[in-house]
Length: 152
Picture 1 (cartoon, one colour):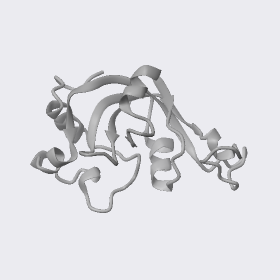
Picture 2: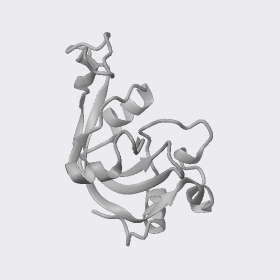
Picture 3: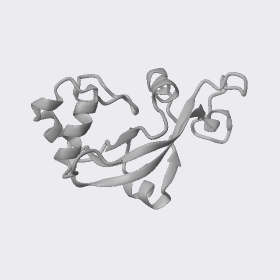
């Protein structure tokens, strides 16, 4: 899951303990949250639009996909006039902080690790804010970040 540090940084999730992941307005990312993300699933928290882009921590899903209420709030920057209670269109999940990386894992470091070849984040044109991570890549990134095994 990707966020810009000036919008919602890892440290804010740590302070908040949990948050809902709202405002996703891409159907593929929505489908990932709606169909694939389950309670207890681990999430890499990625900071984009910073130098260098990096993975700051590991979170986990604590509430499975449900309608993104910001889509139906006309005062929200994420308002979608086509979203209704019967057809909410957009979904979100709740996540909670698990652990910070002991060392951030930068995008250049990930690109330089052959074990991460084929990871969607590293492929050209991948700009989704929510995307799946193969388990072997998740394990590799945790090791790169100084974590012993996959946190639970």
